[in-house]
Length: 284
Image 1 (spheres, rainbow, N blue to C red):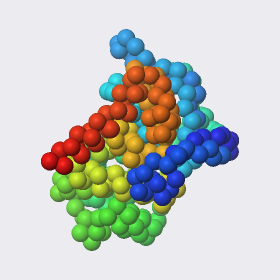
Image 2 (cartoon, rainbow, N blue to C red):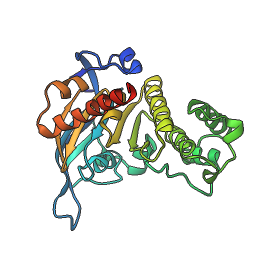
Image 3 (cartoon, rainbow, N blue to C red):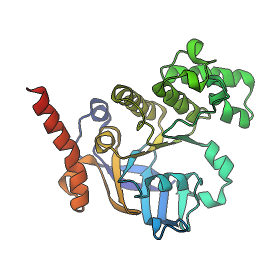
Image 4 (cartoon, rainbow, N blue to C red):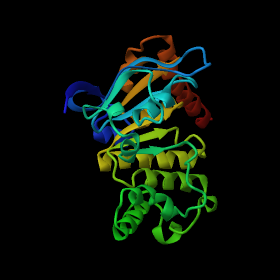
């Protein structure tokens, strides 16, 4: 597997405590490589993604951030071939995904959507079991995996196994969606604004659990978000996108100290202003 040097500003203890650390150069295995990828949508008048080049290390948590229409979700969807690029290549572990059967590719990559996307006619257990059944797992192994995953996402198996999605809260549905994404033991996890529709308390709790699961399972995670504070708290590195192009990639420290332009500087200033305003409000 190819290797490259990257800077990580989050030592593991720092990531857990939410405290940015000084960047340090480490030699890491390259897992995902996006090379000069472009994608245009018919009738849009411009490219959804233009000339994107991006490397993601094995075990890295990378956040893609930018305004609506910046190409974040398109980038995520091209990684597992839900969207096909017009040009360029995407490699996972040195293999071109275009040469991989898309169904097989997706079965090895977990994906969590913003609205959970659970099958409403299936129980929680049946939703989690979808991919293992497609892969031909034995029933005993499937049932054990369901219980294991429900415990991992903090849902009691006895209580939740037979419930249907309409009987769950938004946070519970998203936890089940996360369990389903992990069912076949993928090494890559794609998250498309999975916390956006949740209330603040639930959002914070599930986000923290996602970071813990990423770390404990040794996943490589790509998160799409509009929220810079969320990106700062969860990600090892942040990729800032605007109008289909990659503006800057770096650690929290790098983006704060050396923003590529005024747009990045404004993004980084927003959570600082919010924190200052909150501190002022709470001190009254």
